[in-house]
Amino acid sequence: MNVPLTSKSVKLTQTVSCAGCAAKLDPNMLSGVLSGIQWPDNEKVLLGFEDSDDAGVYQYDDGSKLIATTDFFTPIVDDPFTYGAAAATNALSDIYAMGGEPLFALNLVQYPESLGGEILSEILAGGADACRRAGCPIVGGHSVKSDQMTYGLAVTGRVGAEQRYFTNAGAESGDVLILTKALGTGIMATATKKDLASEVAQQVLADSLLRLNDKAGALLHKYDVHAVCDITGFSLAGHGAELALASEKRLFIETEAVSLLPGIAEAVEAGCLTRGDASNRLYAASKAVITEQCSALLGHVCFDPQSSGGLLIAVQHEDAAAMLAQLHDEGDCAAAIIGRVEEGPSAIVLN
Image (cartoon, rainbow, N blue to C red; front, side, top):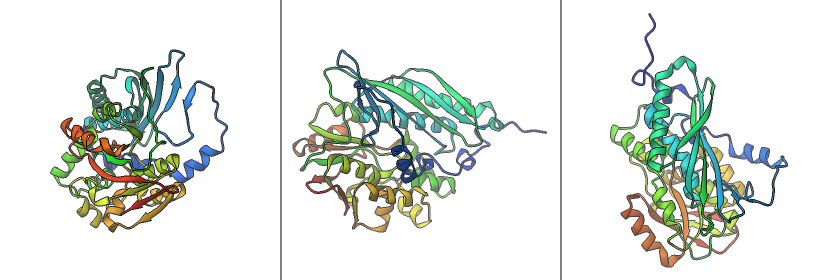
């Protein structure tokens, strides 16, 4: 007798080899592949592949800007609804990192038909819930059958004619670096997959994954912000290195100031590192000079691939305290000042 598969009988993280953004292609291989292609372009494209930004930007004749992005990943938690919501939240983050508002989205699905329809229905319901919270309609999508499950969105957003869009270039010497979420999603997802994460740690992980970056994105227009990126699969160090390279500046990171998800130390001690820990070190070093002066634990955290991570914001020194206070007031309680921008060749110091 065949027993129907349900969300209670299947652990999604056990159905894939890597969880969340840790399943990304090796960034070093990907960089080589992308550099060998002549990409079509035109004068209305304001931002494309140049500096590894979060989204593409296209300008209309009236001065308004269209923002286009896509993101999807494998299950990072076992609950299908939470997984779907986390994947959608992660995709929406690219729009917020550019200072935009989402207009609409399309579902992107790869799914093993052997798991049946109930689990997929819950995944899609989770994505719909995240987009509902973001005020972003889902207008369609595409699906294929696959042995490895992935879910995410293609999202279109906009920035008004009177507003600027933000990139990872433009950080200025003296800027303060603010990170809006705690780090450690890759490590804690691995601990969850190995049944080594407590229920409390799993709940805090889920809460972080489902928190939209909409409030932080809106605040970018209120303060004197010079550069932004969202921290996802290439890690704080990897995406920070992209920002350092694009801005031609040196980032000094006070690693002990970074907020961490609970259970990180125990998970690292138990060996819950992803393959991204090694590949992100190589990738960051290919973009900027990396100096690691922190503890081994914090080093692993800084190179840990993040899923639905926070925004890294380079803001003028005089605005940093006020911006951080407002982030906390808006509910981004893990937001913290984690370092500063200095003159010098593209580099990151993990102190």
